[in-house]
Length: 436
Image 1 (cartoon, rainbow, N blue to C red):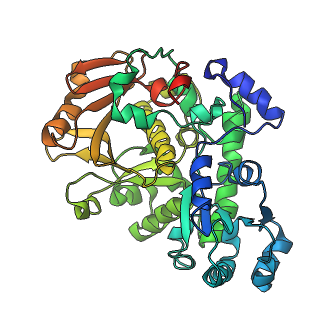
Image 2: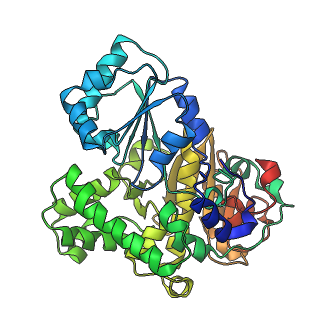
Image 3: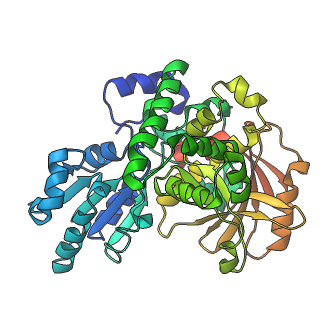
């Protein structure tokens, strides 16, 4: 693992990457803790988030390794599963979704002898959502999702931002020096290492194009039969253009020229392969959270920008998607942080019938924290109307709200609302090293 100061920027990161030095991931401690208590740990995530690198280089010591990307190994997994699982060491199996039958053999072995850390399984599809295997490991496995890298991880800090401390007491960061970052550059780069670690725009564009093609032509066909790839790609672009907006399948089906059942199935496939995330609505009654329409997000802002046809900071700044892309950037950071927590916090949004809304509500350790995101570098009181409404509605559970902005100053806008720089929250403010 390496630790580079964030202010050195992308050039050093790229040089380090060329020297084959592994960048740290903030999920590693949580994964090690899970391996110490559960017989099976399943690491899922979209393709190219770095699961194999994490499993082999950051968690691989004293573990045997098998990948089902190897056709011979995949054949053995189907025909001689029990023999494949015979190992003197704890076993890591990569791309396990290629052999659902192997999960049954793992289940039998764990049932015979439960031993912490026996199996670390990785896969590019959310095994919990796949009907064929959803029950195979019930009660036996801990699931973790590896998201694309955070700006802090890409800067070499192996961290996901100081969310615990920030949500608990934003005033504690009043004296932190926070140099401004161009959030548009961060969003366009995204967090897939092969794209984020490249400064060359044509090369990055080519990578995203190849990623989408591989996803459509290879990964999706493993999950489900897609009759018309062009239709699916059109829906994928529509999702990108609706980033951070309420999901309306009727409108999406109309715009895509597809039936609602088909759109429903395709959205489920996007979610299964970790490219799509549905953010539920906050309601005191938890059942109602499942009824209200969720907001749709993509797993990576670089991918969202590519699909929406936004390739430069100027294009992003001029787009009416700018604010939504910034919200997507924050959500991905929150999702990364959530995976490090046990139990994980709930991430939600809040909207009333009268139009009051808050971008995110974090429900964690018995408290609620409303979070608003603005592209402005000079936040005003008018920007806090949604936060004020939420705090007034839930005064006992929510003691303060946070307004994330693109400036450089932590300030108190009102007795219960703090304005906090985005760079601080993302963990790329240079004075954060002492705070952990």
